[in-house]
Image (tube, rainbow, N blue to C red; front, side, top):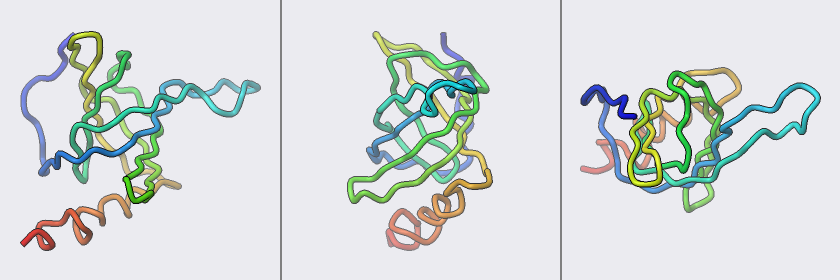
Length: 124
């Protein structure tokens, strides 16, 4: 199930492992307020997206909530769209586009790359 139609990155990617708490299924009204959460690691991250491995496929164009946590406990609550899914041995590689959304840490996430430790300015 390879839905990756070639390289479409519009920003640089960093191979940086972070922990990701991904809500793979939102709760139904009246159910437990927490849906299904998967804990996974990233393969790479960027200001506009990320790539991870997961033990299940996710529907293309799904919009999911996630919390990204760095080793120093810095955490970002974000919303992202599944852009592509690629099956590999017993797991799936999934590409996400991070969406600008109210009540998320979208601006802080972007600033992490533009002005923070991952910016091109700070790596010079």
